Image (cartoon, rainbow, N blue to C red; front, side, top):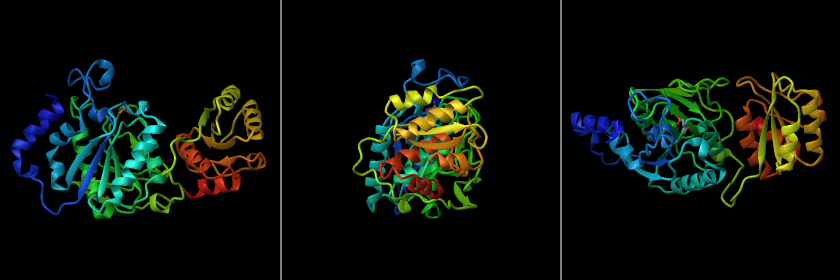
Length: 355
Ligand code: ASP
């Protein structure tokens, strides 16, 4: 029996009333994809070395639900196990399946909100992708944990209970896809992982948090102004692939070799993670111009995780799109979706301004 579960059962015995589902509660579906929240280490002291690679099998969704009976105070909860992998192992196909399942579930009157359990490494990417393709204003909340379920002070149970409470709350409607971790509510647009291991890893450097959870209640302090979900023009209903978009990371002395390789590999778009306000070495610029001449759409962004890359002269002249407030990993997602609709640079720039 995992520590996650032992703790859950102990709490269930102490407060048996909380485990009784109430009638007329909102219905929340948890879609489980894996990550540290579902993983186990070899002892309470394995805080960074855990999961499948250590031979410890991950925890399934029903055990996670059973371990956190507090969530039944807020919603009637059901779970589906879509995947059970670290989030670095998820694929673009997995995204399409997840998004289609969420859209299908949210069409039903019987579903009021969705929680997606997810590894934290790529959580901001999945959240932003869903933010652009979910067609509902019902709450969709991504949640994970920084410590394995067996770790000392595991953060998964509280994060999960908060996620269900948030997905069940009427105030969360219309806010786009959210991430809740460490009592903080982030927008999919604003959020980024900033620390490899710290429980307070998620920050929203450009926007600030959307709100905070306290005693399992959301307190919102802002609302996202960028288009999302029901306002989004992107539709994945009939898609079974996404166009290839690669990211080139710029450093002092780097060149265009990886840009050339991306073009060779069939990239339809390239996001350049430049230095500062999208600056780059001459050789990188030359490779990007060559790629552009071959029809590849170029987005110039920054490797810095905050600030705005607004259009500047030479890049506009070269026909490049400016990433605005999107970090390179989110710019890649928006460019992939943009390319499913158009190759027109002005149109794509409009999308980067609006989403
Ligand atoms: N390796 C984990 C992941 O699946 C990290 C985490 O979940 O915190 O992203």
